[in-house]
Amino acid sequence: MLAILNVIIPVFALMALGYSAVRFRLFPSEGVRGLVLFVNNFATPCLLFHAMATSDFSTTFNWGVIGPFYVGAVASFVFGSLIAIRFFKNRPGEGVSSGFAAMFTNTVLIGIPIIQRAYGTQALATAFSIIAFHASVLITVGMLTMELVRRDGAPLHKALWVAFIRIISNPLMWGIAAGVAVNLLGIKLIESVDAFVNMMAAAVTPAALFGLGGALNDYKLSENWAQSLSMSLLKLLLQPAIAYVLMIYVLHVDHEYARYGVLLAAMPSGINAYVFATYYNRGVNVATNTILITTVLSVLTVSAWLYILGL
Image 1 (cartoon, rainbow, N blue to C red):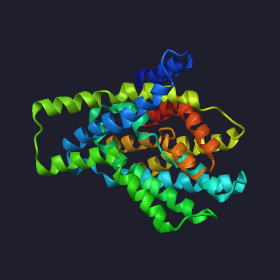
Image 2 (image 1 turned 180 degrees about the vertical axis):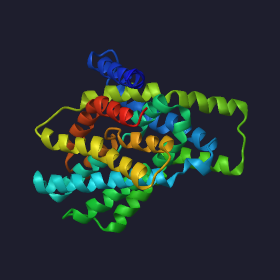
Image 3 (image 1 turned 120 degrees about the horizontal axis):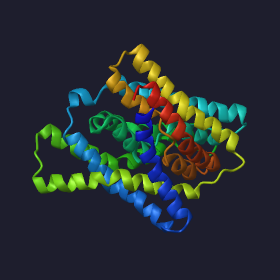
Image 4 (image 1 turned 45 degrees about the horizontal axis):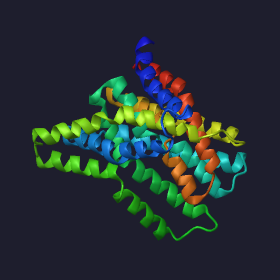
């Protein structure tokens, strides 16, 4: 238990520091967005680049880990959408937005720091093999589904085009692609470039957690808390449970690698759930509440998954 606390406490302490700094006006709230943009657009691409450039691809891309992760994510999306539409009587578009919040994982701002703290840098290569497809695959699934169910939906080719633009314009994908290219071509970075990349990568954890904590000041619980709690339980419990069962009992994946994928699936909802909801103007309150609830509850649920996985 002490080992679990040693992983969890520093991560959420940094988030609490960011939240308190903004809450008590010790750090400007307008600076949070800039900090998160720095993490997503500059620091994390460097971290991804370095991981891909130095990875052994024969073990990194383990489809026994990648596949179950996405099966769990899509299952949460389907169940979340159906629950929102049938039980909470949402319109189809709002239901899809709720399901997306139950599906999309905070892989970068919380996932990377916790996995690195729990299992060390050797776990990052496998985690990045999932992250490489995460935004592109799940945003495409969400957008296509939304366009199919919205009564005012645009043609599918438009949704595909928007998804494609989002994919190729994502700096995370640039970092991954550049790292893979360097690895496959056998290019060795000169010392000064390698030092620069490592310095940028080292900024990811503190900046990401501090920035996310500050951003939580913008999320307030509304009247949709019951629906948001339902989506949160799908995200924090169902999604990693499906990944766990498939990896351990169906595919018999080596436990060392399976725990990386399961723990990543257990992370809270990512900020892209809010971006998706505002893009379509559907279920924005549910998306924001789900991000808030999953982030808070993940203190307990991530600890539980670390215990189940044997840390």
